[in-house]
Image (cartoon, rainbow, N blue to C red; front, side, top):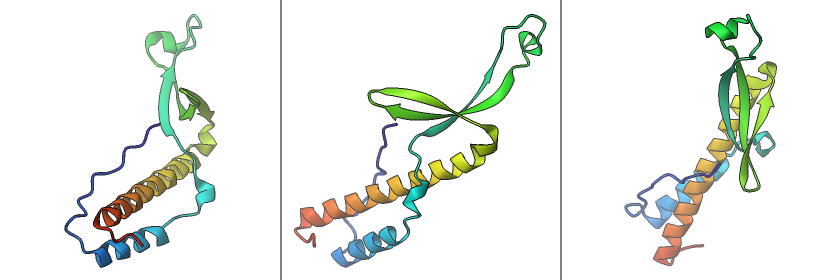
Length: 118
């Protein structure tokens, strides 16, 4: 899934404030072994069997899938119900890391523009 960095206005901060913020962001990184890039989706389905409750609108599920980027295409990977909470946590960790990296990058670009990148 493409990631869009948050819009940050760093122009009002001093170089010292930028470096301090960058350091704090870097120190908050969680365990990177937890990373799972993607997003979770929940789906309900009908089986199509005659007389099944799903033919009356009571769909089966919900089933949880992880949407991941595979080359140029997106792919859905089934997540067993007993692992859904763990996957939610891992996807949240990944989002936190992506957010922090985007902020660190923005800080470094601001310092570079000022000629104060160290």
